[in-house]
Length: 551
Image 1: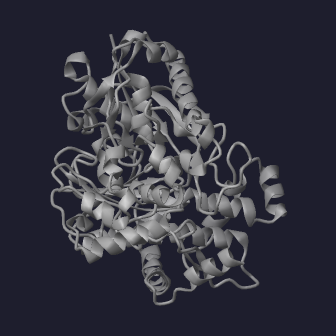
Image 2 (image 1 turned 90 degrees about the vertical axis):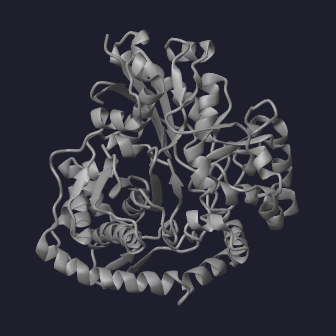
Image 3 (image 1 turned 180 degrees about the horizontal axis):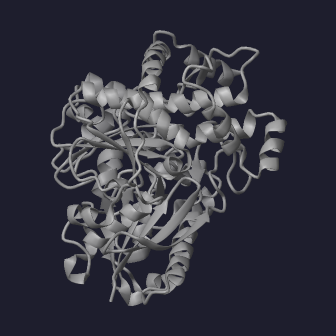
């Protein structure tokens, strides 16, 4: 009997389950569901307005997606439930929620149903920038050794500053919470009845690794009421690929599966893509390109790299350090422009041609030569994640005239994303982390060849593309095959699993020498702007934000 594993990927707007053949990684069925309430950025489900920079979610949307997508995918696959040998989950990170003593979502308590901080905070919640700055300053003042693992700057998207934000701004939520838990660990709790905490998100988002000294004094220096924060982060810590528990009878009935199936440690949606792209050695950088971009590179050593989003041993694959950096808006930036900045006649043309507005703009932008638009953009439409790590920075477009057209701006946005990734790649390399190969995965690399060619030209290197369109879900399935083990029909370790189940496309994107020459000149201008507006030389973006908030 063939054996299969299930991977469930929880993105920003939707969740997806895939059924993968353990012998070759082929996805034989999948199901996707959007979250009923989407991202809560303006108001809670009750209608209560939210402060600026909030990004929350209703955890029950995730629960519904978990049980609905798996059951649907299993039905589509038409396989015997006994053929499923493992389950794996990945979630955007840090996305976490507060639980009560009974390990139930705090948002369900009547006294907290209208309290924003009682809801699940998404990765893109940027309300904790003040707390991130406080942690960074204290870390530097005390010369804390863990600064080496986060590039010396704490990002507002991580769990640690968001927890301090709750302590500062909603002390009643902090006090009532028995356990702050990453969403992936919570979903594993629903499947297995076991409270575990995956070491990968714990390492990146709390800047914590096994063997670290007690940090209670550091937390107390931030806020006396914060000293017990790790007591509120309970759960057995387990490494990637290990077994978090086994599917309970109750969960199995909801999923249409057999009880007792091993469920692997929850993973981060970006990092889990590494084996799905067939990456198994140092020097290979994976760019996960979708709503955002995460750039993960493996290394057998751990030099200090400023402004990274973390460096954790075993953070993506066992035995290797995994460096993380990224961009906070990629697909989000394109969607913002298409939805808000394009004249109606473009929509009419797209409708007449039977294509999407974004496809129309892409086609028009592709007819432009590098440098022809005369525009330059900074890719900070949702702040800068790496290596400035500043959520208060904002986007910029320079060079517009009365002749500028929407496709010019759209191309400038595409180019800015490539410049941002090059800045990340160059930062890695200049500080001793080799990048010998770039592999892209996610929906955009499959859908936008123009952007992929711009990447190749700007980075001046060949770009490979992961074969699977659902690399995150497949990566979770790969780790599930490791938790199942070779005796069940899975694999002994993730390296063996990646070799069989992770693949790239035969077609690659290679740099065009003429384009490279132009983009070298343009990137120098991008770098000037990046440093001028991002390093404090000209803090106009922060001043504008403050004026807006006070208006």
